[in-house]
Image (tube, rainbow, N blue to C red; front, side, top):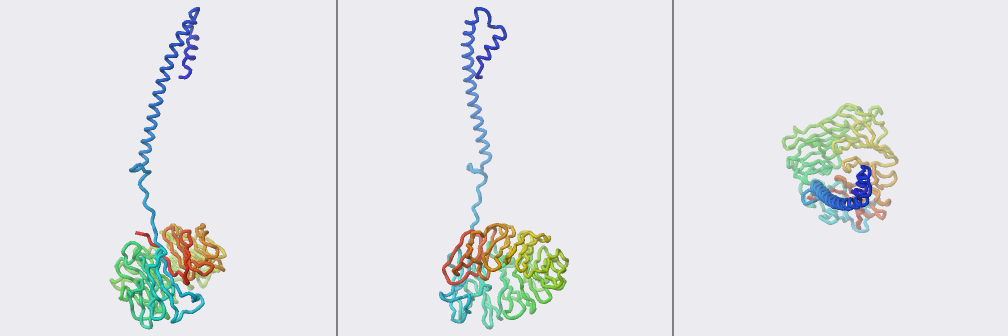
Length: 446
């Protein structure tokens, strides 16, 4: 509407409307009329612009209302972040005792403890006359409680937070414990298997100075073997509870029914007819057995699915493990200075040179290789730089202790001056006592 007057005059001249001596008066009259019309059009245009702006603002508001949830927030309210509790067991020795070099005697005084998020929960005396011991493989954290075992000349004792909860004849060590299934963090083995739905505690134990083992449900012996030695804790294959044992003939997979008290005849044992060699690791998955074999003949070395070769691995490896992460299976193979991780099809997913492989960890549902250098114990993780904040002068505590839950990782460490520490999600937690952490566990806060 900006050039209405000029356009109208030009049109009139072109049409021959303006002529002769009346042109001046006529043009003045026309100009006044056009001024009035232009003002009215401008006012009308302004009112229309206001209505358009209002409509646009209303449409924007409606669009915003459509994209927000109740209360004007974007979408449904976000769930609160999951909080985790960090449990740690350890041994605190008297000041001045060199627990790395000196052998413990009857007069050695130490305290076995359980911490929750850095706060002491349980302290148990060890030493002469005490039932709790200091060895790391005798400690496990289950359902927020410290389970430990020890033995006299005649009996084996299982303690829960320092209180005796089971005992039986014979001088044995405990390989694993499976608590009853009851939800939450409860009902797990130290290997992470979900609890036994029959409501009874399962205990896998064996002689301290001989071959053989016993599987107990509370005080009842379900299985007793004289030659086999357990080489795994409890783990799950679907609804089945399994564990592995080995003798000179190879690996045996024990499968425990849903209710182990239904009778020992229902506990199944699987053995495979594989080529001669060292069966380094085995795992039952989907009712089938994967075995990592270092054959006497190099051509026989590799991974087998039941009794059929799945893929070949050159036989230079000395150690290995088979891991289940979510629905996938991975094989960690360690040679003298090289660690490789294969998937179940034989594809190499990771290779790390000049290292000592510690384990394959399921961080965020993806496999990560935890390893150290060949001459030090400083931890690294591949792939990624998750452990880049671990100080260079800190190393993994011996024996190794670490725990993973979801994307959260905790490692037991030793500082340069020999003090115990825990690295947890990027933070180094240092402690001032003479001793070490023996076990770590993460549990979701209910």
